[in-house]
Image 1 (cartoon, helix red, strand yellow):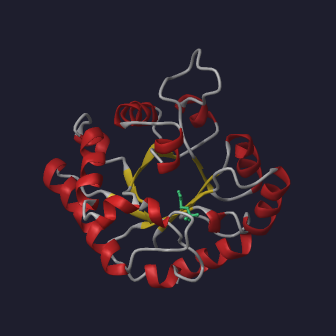
Image 2: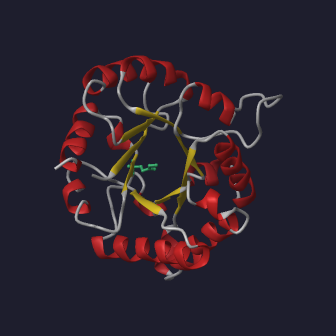
Length: 239
Ligand code: 13P
């Protein structure tokens, strides 16, 4: 069974979160992580079986960082995974590899597994530079980490042009890119890294994506906010 990570972004208000939990929270979620917005952590902890994840983390620890949420604070809510370097944050918050390195260090110190997002934009794909781009994104961070730290990281490959568009690469492309990521990390750091695929995963394409043996799971945005669809994806994944 592959790992499912739901990134609910800023889609849901409190009533919608309660409704989502009511419909989904009691099913077997042993391989399903939900990353809600911070204000909803307690609701998921109290009312659902999902493993709790975070959409982000502060690059500094406990202290004077107004508006941030530190890894220690996440840990105190039993957060087990945290997304780092989502393309929306790389783009809107201008997060670079240096910031992402510090975020990963903070998470590892609090024993939270980072889900490190990488991916190319459309122009990069069209100019055939996907592997150069994602290779650089990986190495700029991993070159500064110990092997024992890299072993705890999960990579999420999310082509930017596939996020929220309903378009996905074909299976062979996802397989090829995933194998490239795994080989790169294996050759350079001697680590067998887990790789998730993200970008327009939904109930229509989940069984087809399930045929890609190289991927270890999915990072799901929009479809993770709709209870019925998410349940269907979970059911399909457990077949
Ligand atoms: P969608 O599943 O909505 O395309 O979003 C993917 C994503 O950004 C998950 O982090």
